[in-house]
Image 1: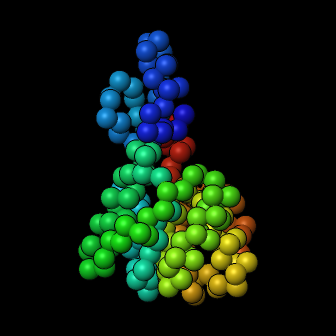
Image 2: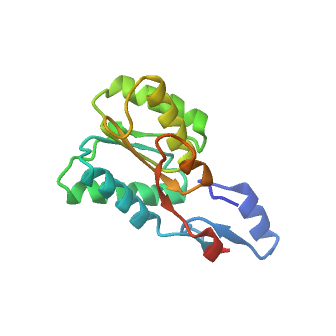
Length: 174
């Protein structure tokens, strides 16, 4: 089960004394076991990669109400700060974990900030939606806007161009 800000499914299982293991991030309430990746480091590496490729105005698409995403936001900020780049709150757009919302939010942020040259999407689904929007607008990825996703789902290698992404070792987690 993935985590949300207040996930009733997890709370219900825990209150019934059901043994539960959740993929995610450290919760505020540690009544159950959490398995996950180093979200902060993964986001840091993703944003640092964008910076190394020349990106200077990097958007963040994700919903920090999810514990994992909040930690990825920390890694995003750390990479920008270490590169002496500003953390612009306007470039953080609350985005659901769907390609449809990634598409819509990329459209929204690009209308407000057409000079964005980088995008960190907290999931590959979001990144693929953003990539679709940019491609439809004849914006060349990665030359004009570079994108990095998170999860390393199989579909990332099938799109054109293939998507740079942060892998999570879900097999080891399992």
